[in-house]
Length: 213
Image 1: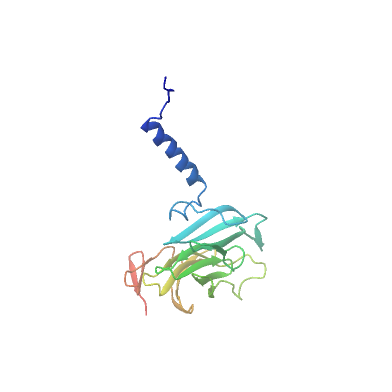
Image 2: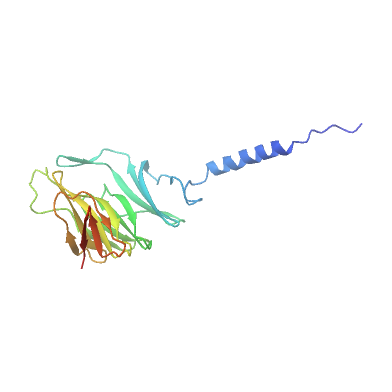
């Protein structure tokens, strides 16, 4: 008598194959292998804060273990930024507390916000520029007042950067040249939102449009 063999059905083969593929995907660096999803935590990081992508490049803001940074009456999370180019992960060499990465539209540069202002780096991290300094000489010695940068937006042609500067009491928009940090325009106080015009030479504040030089 021929021995009896139980061959798996086509359905069971598909189920097993799917389970194997799922197990393999579990060990892939999420986001880097597939170009989407949540990226893996950089070495030494304990919590993902935010990330920005451009093609295969991803800039990651994550928090390290340890106590927060105290600057006078202000407490700043222990965040840093890392850049993964699709091959390796590298840490940005800006001050502790850096976060909010934003790629230029052409993907050649990444801007980050640090406790001391706005920094601009080349995609390979070989060039670094302190584009806007928030440390002011007229601040009170007790450190109660400090400037913060937020809401960073690149001009469509990557020539300029606009962002909100806040003091806790008010906020305004600064627009700087992305090549040298020269301030092109400062909005009136009590400005809390803006949008770039498609020509990169105009900025929109609510119903008002300002033409830039």
